[in-house]
Image (cartoon, rainbow, N blue to C red):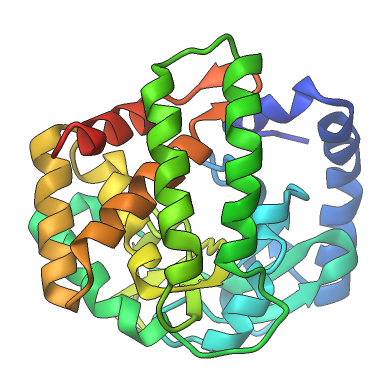
Amino acid sequence: MEIPAGLSWVRQTPEGREWLATLARWRDECAQQWSLRLGPPFPYAFASLAMPADLPDGTPAVLKLQYPDPDSRHEADALAHWDGEAAVRLLAHDPQRRALLVERCRPGSPLHELPADEAVDVVAGLLPRLWRRVAGPFIPLAEEATGWRHRLPEKWDRAGRPYERRLVDAALDQLDRLVDSQGEQVLVNQDLHAGNVLRATREPWLVIDPKPLLGEREFAVVPIVRGVELGHSPEAVRRRLDRVTGALGLDRDRVVGWTIAHCLAWSLDGDTVFTNQVEVARWLVDGT
């Protein structure tokens, strides 16, 4: 079976190789279970195998087989809560196979094709529609952030201390300040960047691939602030930060703190260093 190049990283671990070995069978079983006609996988996949699917009545959909990482564990639950409001609609879910059948966006072009300011304004319009007060099964941001706080120094040390210790300390200080002083807890998406919003027909723009948590609203804008899709420079980060916090009436200082912490929490994967994340954190620590 064709595996997109973006998924090649999963071959590095026994768990990843085991998952890859199941994909062809799970794809075929899902196609039979839901009577799907499948196309070749989308080439840009990174954390799942996703392919276009047509239902028996011709309805276009996407079949998504998730890599079993914890961040996307409750994606189907989030989509079910939103029920098509500002996000793709969940059509079916097979928890055993981590398989989702979701609405297909057409034409499906990403938000970052818009000018940066317009794209930020689109996100600012979508976010309040996604901020739902819900009960479980979602992981609280406080719990997730406590894990970042414990793991970051160890991961940084094991990776060979690839950036300044002062950045690690800044992230830890922000987490100490932010975790227990949050505002109202709502459903937030820690990966709502401009590549995860697609042009559609049912609505002009729909969110895909959520990584949901329960946390305060200020955390929800972190992905659009830190994402490289709308420009990667101190000036671009500052402009997105100011524009989105101003449009939504959010506490800018808390958004800065969460962005520093999240960038560094997601900056390391074994020996791999995601330098874009480190650079955004450094710019913010240094006063962007």
